[in-house]
Length: 257
Image 1 (cartoon, rainbow, N blue to C red):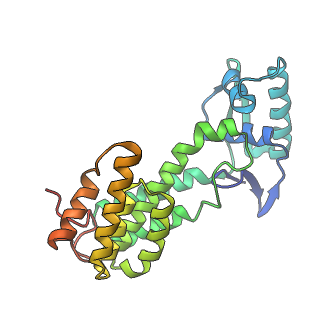
Image 2 (tube, rainbow, N blue to C red):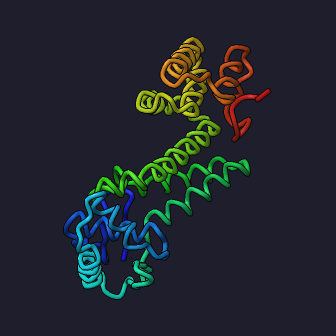
């Protein structure tokens, strides 16, 4: 059985979806999956399902939702009631976020070891597990609590994949993607530094410098900070022509000083 939360929360068995009707049941399932076998107290579950307006019948409703999930999922999982809370353990199946974590960790390690090709392959596989916005179909309380760290892990994997592909000389293909990403995430300095690197390698030095100026203006005006070491070092390297070219390094594409 496959459990998925990196997109719409869903469960499948032998390629067919197992219906999990209702946001409350999907939220309860996703919450328990995210805790990797740890017990979640009733109070925590109530907050993630109902926010500040939990009903007086919380325990009874949680019991009902768990019973319904147990009947739908069968022996693939085990629900335990422990110390006024619930625990879920996957007995026969996999969880997409676990696969994402394993593949992205392998990709980061390969990149650090100077193997951008195998690193990029692992990171692409990790990112392919995302089927859209994570935790889709659950309550906003669970999304607000858990989605930011999932999205940050996704962005870290994406940025590392781009580092690997820059090291492999794929800057021309990356320019359009990075242009869109920087537009969507204008305050992420690593993405902007990568965009500058790709532009510079495409012999668009003026555009790379303009990208830095726009980023610096945003950082100073919106959050009141100057560019950090990564973006500043990329800017210096573009100015003095010391930005490394493809395959010279799988690390930062400039000499930090």
